[in-house]
Length: 123
Image (cartoon, rainbow, N blue to C red; front, side, top):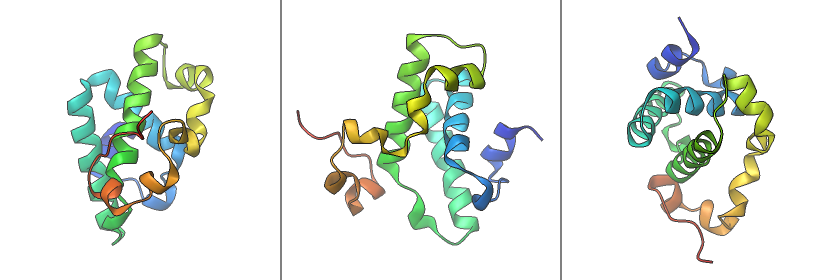
C-alpha cells in the first residue's frame, strides 16, 4: 500500500509518523486535491490515527491547517517534481517552530487553537 493510502486509512502507527511524514502527507494531498478537500482528508486521517492510540486530544486544528496553508503556498510559488525536490527547496518546513512567524506560543498552545482553527496573531 502506498504512503498516502496508508495515511488516509490511518494505517501508519503514530510512533512511526514523524514530522517529515506530516509534511509529506500534506504535500501529497495538495498535489491531488484542492486546499479545502486536502484539509478535510488530512484532518480525518489524523483523527483516525490519534483515536487508534487513544489520544484524540493530540489533534491540533490550528497547527494542522496552518501547516497545510504554508505547504500549499510554497507549492503554488514553485512547482517541484516530487516531495524530495519540494523538501530540498523548503528545508524550513522541517522546523516545527515555523508557525512562530505568525503565531505567538501563548495563542497557538491554547485549547481554542487545538479544538478549532484560530487566525494568526494580529500584526
